[in-house]
Length: 308
Ligand code: PSU
Ligand code: MN
Image 1 (cartoon, helix red, strand yellow):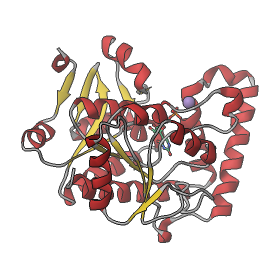
Image 2 (cartoon, helix red, strand yellow):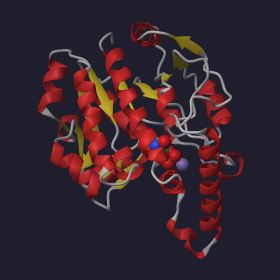
Image 3 (tube, rainbow, N blue to C red):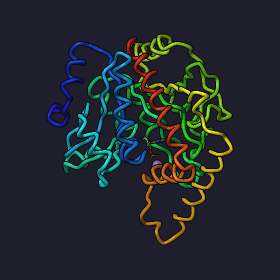
Image 4 (cartoon, protein in one colour):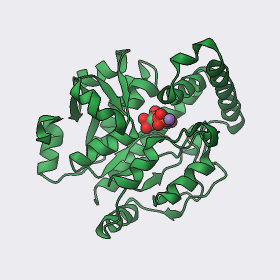
C-alpha cells in the first residue's frame, strides 16, 4: 500500500538494495531556509559532499503528493525557485499527500519519510527547538518530538539562538534523546561554536558515534540521537554580531505579530521569518556560515553512515 505513496529515486533504490550507506537531506532548508540562488547551489553541493564521502544522498520532499526519497536536479531546482511550496512537518503530511500538493519537508517530516525507506541518518544545518517565550506561546518544534519516536540520527550544528537553547536541551532530555558532541564539549549555537550549554557526551570519531547509534537501536530504545557538529572556527560568525542580529530579528517579529499584518504569520512561518531577517541584517554573512556548516554536517553524516 505504502509503495503507492512513495517514490524512491533509482540511485537511492539501488543503494537500499545493495545495503550501501545513505544520508537523508531535508528540503525546507531549500524552500524556506535560504534565498535563491544560494539555496540551489548549496543543495547540490551538499549532495556532492555526501557522494564524495562514500554515501548516497537522499533529498526528501513531497511533489504532487508523492513522497520523494531522492530528488533529481530539476526537482531541486523547482523547490529552490517556486514560491508556493508548502512547509511540511509531520502533521501536514497526510493532507499534502491526499491533495497532491507540493511541500518541502522539515526535520520532523524528513526523519519520518527517511524512516519509511529505512534510512538511518540525516544531515541538516540546524533543527527546530523550543522558542523563546514558549511558556506563553507553546511554540515547540515538532522536530524534538520526532527525535523521540523515529529511528533516525540527525547531524546538525546545534540550534540557533533565535530559540531558547537551554529549554531545547531540557526538552530533549525529557524525551530521552541523547545529545552527542562530535569533538565538542559545548552544544553549538549554529553560527557560533559556543552556546553556554554542554552536550551530554563527547565522542571523537564517526565510528564511535555510529556505535552509539547502533547500540541505542539494538537495545530497542526508540527514537533518534542528535549529533552536534560545531561550525569550524574559520567560518564561525562573530558572537556580538550574531547576537545583535538575532535580537533585531526577534524585535521585528514582535512588531509584525502586534501589527495588522499579524494574520500573515502563523506558527510555522515564524522560523522562516526569523531566518530571513537574520540573513538580511547580517547582509549575507550568516548565510555564508550557514552554507559552510551544512556542508560540514553532510560530510560527518556520510562518514558515520559507513558504519550503520
Ligand atoms: N533551523 C535552521 N534552519 C532551518 C530550519 C531550522 O537553522 O532551515 C528549518 C528546518 O527544516 C526545521 C524547521 O525542521 O525549520 C523547524 O521549523 P519549526 O520551528 O516551525 O518547527
Ligand atoms: Mn513552531
